[in-house]
Amino acid sequence: MFKPAVADEEGNFTFRTYEEEWRLVPEYPDYAVSNYGEVYSFPRKIVRLNSQSGQPNEITVRGGMLNHSLSVHGYPRVQLSRPGEKIKKYVHSIVAETFIGPRPDGMETCHNDGIKTNPEAWNLRHDKPKGNNSDMDKHGTRVKGEDISNARYTNEEIRNVKMLLKKHGVMDVSRLTGIPQPQISNIKTGHTWKHIVVSEQQLPLDAPVKPGFGPPK
Image (cartoon, rainbow, N blue to C red; front, side, top):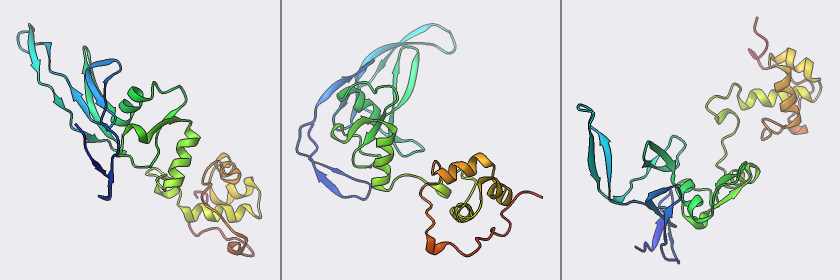
C-alpha cells in the first residue's frame, strides 16, 4: 500500500518518494508495522476465560489496521496485546525499535522534524536527551518556564530574581523572595530558567522586589 503524501499538523502535504515497507514488531509477533507508522494486527485465535463460567473460550480476533489515538502529550499510540499483557505503546517507539533497533539505555527516540504526529521511520533516531532538547529548541516545541503546567513561578518573577542576583548574593535573594536557596542557586547557574535573560539595559539602579513576592508572613 503506497500513500503518495502525508499531511503535517497544519495540513501541508509532503510527497513521499519511497515505498511502504512492512516488518514484524519485535516481541509482538501478532503485529506488523510499516515505515509509514501504520500498525497492522494479524487475524488469530486467542483463548479467554468466560467471566461467568470460568471456562476457557476460543475467540477469533479479526485482523486489520489499528487506529491511532493521541496521548495527553500529543503522540500517536496504539494498543498491543500478547498472552497476559495489554499495553499502549507510542507508534514512533514501535517504528524506531523495528526499523532502527532497540533504544539504548539513556537514549530517547527523537523526531527530526519536530512533529509529534509524524512517526515515519526516516523521521526518527535514537539520541541523547541533550540532542532531543536541541531539537525542541530548534523547532520551538520545548515547554519552558511558566508554560509548564506545574510551574511555581512566573517568567516575570524569575526575571526579578535574576535582576536581584546582579547585586545580591544567593542567601540575600532567597531571603528577599522566599525562594529556597538551592533553587536560587540553580537559577543563578542557569541550571533552571536558562531561557530568562536579563540584559544590562533592563537592570535598574536598585532592582525592586515584586509586590507580594517574598517570604510568607
